Structure formats: C-alpha cells, structure tokens
Amino acid sequence: MGLDEVGRGCLAGPVVASGVILDPEKPVEGVTDSKLLKSSSREKLAGTIKKKALCWTIAWCENTEIDKLNILKASLQAMVRCVEKTNPVPDYLLVDGNKGLETLMIPSMTLVSGDRLSASIAAASILAKVYRDNIMKTYHREYPEFGWDKNVGYPTAVHYDALGKFGYTPYHRRSFRLKTDKAYTKRP
Image (cartoon, rainbow, N blue to C red; front, side):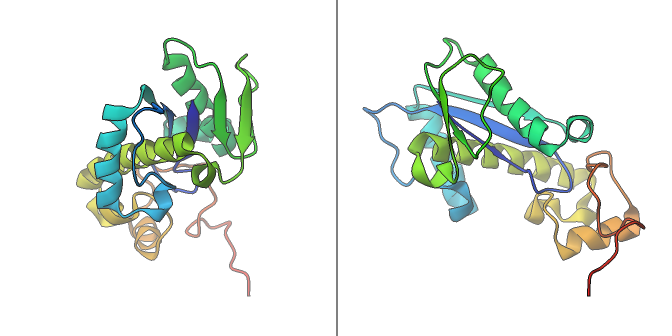
C-alpha cells in the first residue's frame, strides 16, 4: 500500500492521508505527484484510481488534533488510520517521506519524494489532495473571505489578509505561528 498525506503546510483545515493498493493488471495512466497536476486532472484521475485500485482508503486529523499532536504526528496518525481501515491488512507499506509508521507491525519502506517515485504513493497523493480540497471548498461557503475555494487553506496573501481582518475561524490551526500573531516578527 502506498501512503501519502496533504495539507501539512496549511494554516487551516485537516491533514488528510490516503492509502492505495494499485492493481498491476489495471494501470492508471497519468498518475504522478498531485502537486504537478491541474485540479481538473486530479479530479478525473481520482475517479479512475477509485475504480481501478484493488483498495483505497482516506483518513484525516482535524485541525484540533493537529494542535494537540503537532503536524508531523498528526500526519503519521492519519496514515496509520488509513492502514487500520484496510481489510485485509496490507502486506507492505510504502510511506512518502522519511518517517515510518513504527506503531504498525507491518514491513515498510519510507521514500523521500515517494509521490514521484511510486505509482501507489502518487495515487494516494491524488486521492488525499482531491478529498482535502473538497473539504476546504465546503468550508469556504461558511468563510468566503479567506479564499479557501482557491488557496484551500495554504498561506497566501488573501488568507493572511483575512486573518488580519477577521481573526481565526474554528478551522484554523492555533498551534501554528502566523504572520498576524503579535509574536511574529518580520526578518529584514
């Protein structure tokens, strides 16, 4: 199973992970790192991956969990949840990044830039990105001034401007030091 997460660098929203076991008999053309794809391509590929994969799963940690755990632990926890939801348990895990899932007693390998090296990790990155983007677009309806339909929670000028004007929403990560915080100081 290939595992990846999205949303680590965001100021708001969950961190979302996905796990995918691809069927070697049903390759999915065009699968690559989700960051390299246009939104429309990701949406189309996500549907194809779900149809052709032997197994896929999605799990997440909400912003409040991120604040309690920290972003790294929350990212790993979301991946663990993906594996725990999978039945039968995968034989082997390919984990994007340099931190493994030691709490699971499953053989695994970490791959830095795994979403560019492994088709199953790339497929997981696509499913996680599409799922998380859709969550943030839903949140945008409630807080349109933050521009989450476009920036999906990542730090942008629009997002920082809205934080300065309106403050935190219930979806913001309070543990992240933001430019709008009084403790933040600009470097020359």
